[in-house]
Image (cartoon, rainbow, N blue to C red; front, top):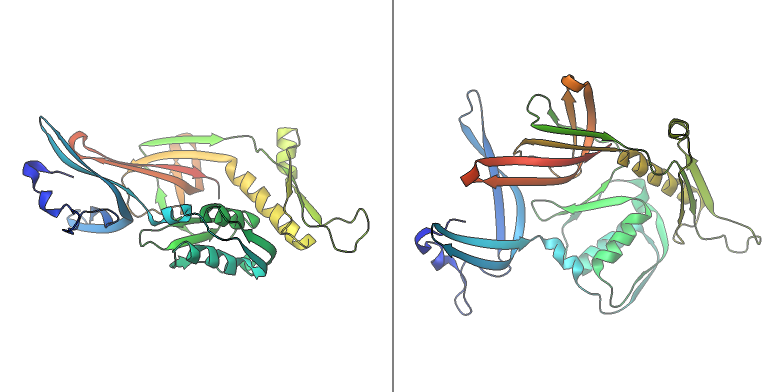
Length: 308
């Protein structure tokens, strides 16, 4: 931020003299554009809420700035759990809420996906482990994704569900990188916990194939996944389908550079169309990087995309 003539000095918090700019204070970042014909109506969109970690004053000839280094509230997931907790036969959705609340993240949004009602036979939250590691382990059971939105609500997404398109890009594309890579896995075998009291070779497992990709590439890409939290063949089959879907999504890797657009969220689905190379498809945002630099007149966004 511009700190010419030290105008922001009075807003800096000191021990015993609390001011708006201080450690762990919230920073609401808004960005916008002009709409209408001609574009003359300014609109502001909240794009993120962050907490101040570090404050830097920068001063050199021609430079007087205040720099704030911030992180979002998911840093609380890096806290260490003090006592081991064991959960038996709890639904996946209940466990996700439990871990988030223990980390102090009480605002979360879960999708209405059937896998959230699936029972997890045994889950251990170890002493000395972080809540982030536990949450990631739970999400891997049925391929859930999560991110913190601009209102500090932890959003969970099931990427296998139907996705609506939130935005379309055509002539305003500044850069398009279009890549189709060889699918890494086209044959998935998932093994769960063997049935109790079964025969010596009794198994709880399922497998799926991508025959079309196997024929196209001319080779088998085998992935074997073992998860003792899967108790039935149906659960193994569901997990195998999720894993294959992720392999298929990762087969398409795109990148576009566009004028800055604050309306995007992670995991949104957009369409891109470029008639010059006969490309038209839908893709999902997996990484977003935006740059605003007034001195260099830079105001752009780079989106990393994968298949839907």
